[in-house]
Length: 518
Image 1 (cartoon, helix red, strand yellow):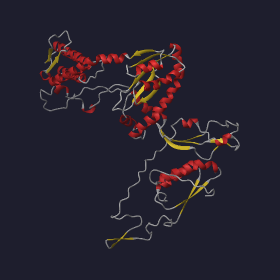
Image 2 (tube, rainbow, N blue to C red):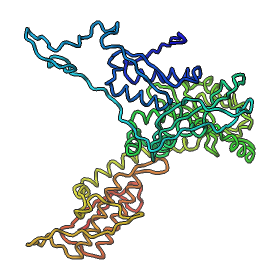
Image 3 (cartoon, rainbow, N blue to C red):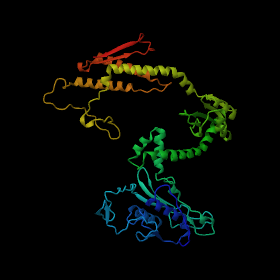
Image 4 (spheres, rainbow, N blue to C red):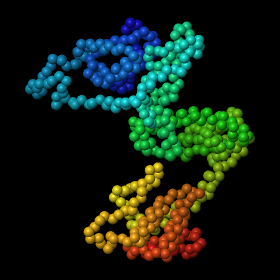
């Protein structure tokens, strides 16, 4: 008011209490250096719905603003209904409402049945910090004149940061040079330690970002799985988990990889140069394809980007920065992409070129993998037709240990034998002898292992699920025959297990063998 200066704020949402206080805080942080001696702010307000004195959210935010800045806040309200914008407001003396010609008493602040019910404000839940820390710059003297710094009477930033183990209320008080003629008087020096807790503008610590990135990249967890894991430690939404990974973790990871130049220099000195690999992910629905250039020895990504086209000019532009490296490129490994081969020959004419052998093996194994996949489907159908009802049965466990399969670890639990419930007139079928109980346990383990074998996954060309499932089922059948030769099982455990020999098995010419447990 004294300086006759006007500041206008524009927003994209509604005029709420939080919006008004946020604008006030932004104005003070931008103009506090012009009023270093101010200790009290007098604010003129109307009786609007967002700034009324009984609006708890507005008063709470103003109290927090006073605590942050150390200022005394005086709120000066216009008399009710004296604002020039309050023409349409109801008279405060009105205590009756006329509806359909009848008068109904109405208390002040009360809504009638004909009025629309007020929607409560969605106030976020408050985070209670375990500790309050105000950081000051580590530098004690001005970097320009060398004189001692003075602390400003305001906070550069103040926020609540969620870590994996606790919640902190942290703030940073800037320092500046007290000499107006010094260039350091216009600088606001902040604490490096305070900035090392969380990213600017973020209320989640770096340990939360690392946990999200580690679970995503190392374990290929989905955002929903990461959110379920973090929900017990951090208050965060599933959508914000994806935002932190895309907008915070990946840029930090890219900056971190730029610090590997010393390691690359050591590798180049030991090998006489670098060996790089080029590869891209398959595009989906005509979308751009992402490509990577990695150093093979260390795995460091030298360059990555989205390519809208996969022709020679595009690949040449993508590979062009490699010519400016201070280390020579000894060899290049890539797939036999149509436009990539001539692009590498043009950009790196003196480097040796090698096609990726894993792609060759995968292409060679495709016919065999298709036959193996069909064989696996037929094998699973055959086994389930014979013993499907048995392998779907759940094993009987003790009532107190239902679902507990792990009994080892740092605090192991004793493994107790399940006991049958007491019965006054046990039937001969329910009363198992010791040999029969042992036989029942053996059969249960065989059925569990068989059920597991039907879920094996293949990874051509190194692992074919059909052949592996057949070989391991043969081992189960062979073990079952050995058990039959050494012991006698009860009649109620009669199992018929038929397995069909693999066509390539030279030990079973003609097609099939049958193993019967009884």
